[in-house]
Length: 141
Image (tube, rainbow, N blue to C red; front, side):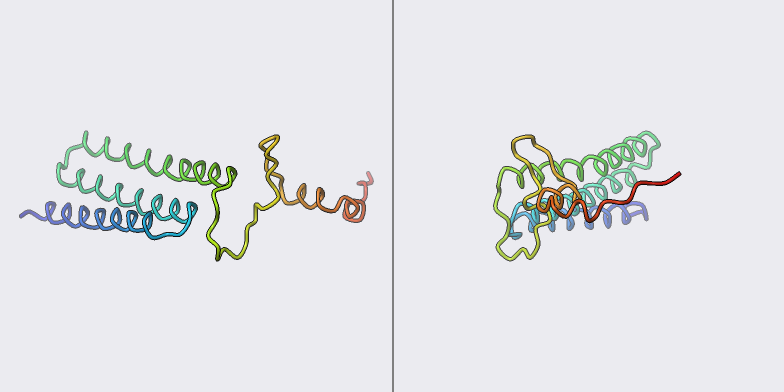
């Protein structure tokens, strides 16, 4: 076997192990957000390594161009898709794991208007009387 075949085999093995790790994360993690985290990171990196193995094995400029385009597409779209799926799951009420210590979004989502309040807006909604105390004085010119 040539050196490129060994490198391709190692990349395939590493990519396959990461894909296996993603599958185990999907099975073992307790809630939607943790499953999304495990599958997105390990799955995107694993598929990227497998695609690199293809490019190394074929050693063709056309294949390299396609592989790099595929990897860029995966790296750009997988996190965005996972974020959107996780956000939708959170907002429709998919239960979080019972041992979660902090929920930064709790109470900040307005289901009627489908908006998420910033920390300042959220604090203002909770304590409108404190607004006068925290306002900056007008700027003098």
